[in-house]
Length: 330
Image 1 (tube, one colour):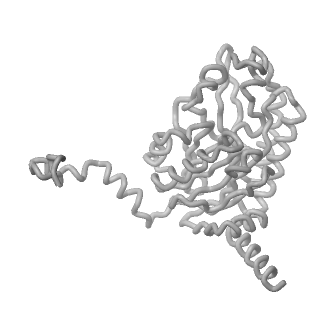
Image 2 (cartoon, rainbow, N blue to C red):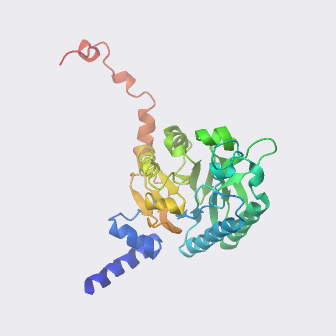
Image 3 (cartoon, one colour):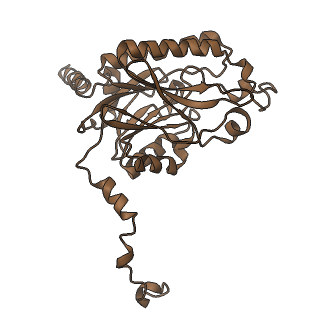
C-alpha cells in the first residue's frame, strides 16, 4: 500500500512539474521517460492525438472530431498550455478510397464535391472562436479549398490566441497518391512566433525528407510542428524519424497523429537530444501530452554544426600527402 501511495505521489508531482495530464505522467513514469527541462523563454505546448474521419460526407463524424478537438483545447488550457497542436486532417482527413471518383474499389481522381465544405467551415470557426475564448494558440491540419479547377491544399492552419488565422502551411512533399489524385502541393516553408519561440510547420509524410527540417534549422526555428495521420497502425517509422530530426538539427519536434494510430506510435514532443519529453498514452484514445519548450542560448551544438558546414575543415586538409591521398595501404 505504501509503495503504491508513493508511486501515485510521484505521478502527481511529475504532472504538476510538466503540465502533463495524470494519465500522461503515469505512462511516462512507467516508461522511464525523463522530464523535459524548461528552457529559457519556454512556451508550454500541448500535442494532441484525436479521432479521424476519412469520409467527408459523414457529417456526424466531422462534428465528433470537432468536438473532440475542443474538449482537448479546454484540457490543454487548464494545464497551462500556450499552444495546442493537432494532427493532419483533425476535423476531416479524406481517404483516397472515400474520395475516388471510381468508387472505393479503385483509386482514382478525388471527387471534391463530396466534401461538405460548409460543415467543415462551421467546425473550423467553432475551433477558432474557442481559441479566442481560451487565449490559446491552436495549430491543426485541414483541407484548404482552392479556386476551380485546382485541387485543394493539405494544410496546417495556425490560429492565434486572439482567434485570428495568422498563417497556413501547405504540404510540399506529397505522397504519390496525394499528388496524383488528391491535392495541390505547397511551395514554401512557414514560421510563426509565440512568446519569442519560433515554430515551423510540416505535414503528412514530410518527416521522410531531412531537407524540410534542415531548412527550418536554417530559419532559426526552435520547434517544428509535424502533423500527420501517423501512417498505418503498425508504422513506427514516423516517430523514429521525428527523434532523428530533433537530434540531428538540435531542435524540438511536436509529433501529432490520429488517435487510432497511437497504438504503435502515440503523439509526443521530441527534445533536441533526440528523446521524448512527453508522449500521449498508446491506447487509441484522444489525449494530450505537454512539454515546456524553447530556445537554449547556452547550447553550442547548433552554432557549431553550422560552422562545421561552412568549410572550416578545408585549410586543414592534407591532400598533398600521399599517406592521406592513397587509400590502398595501411
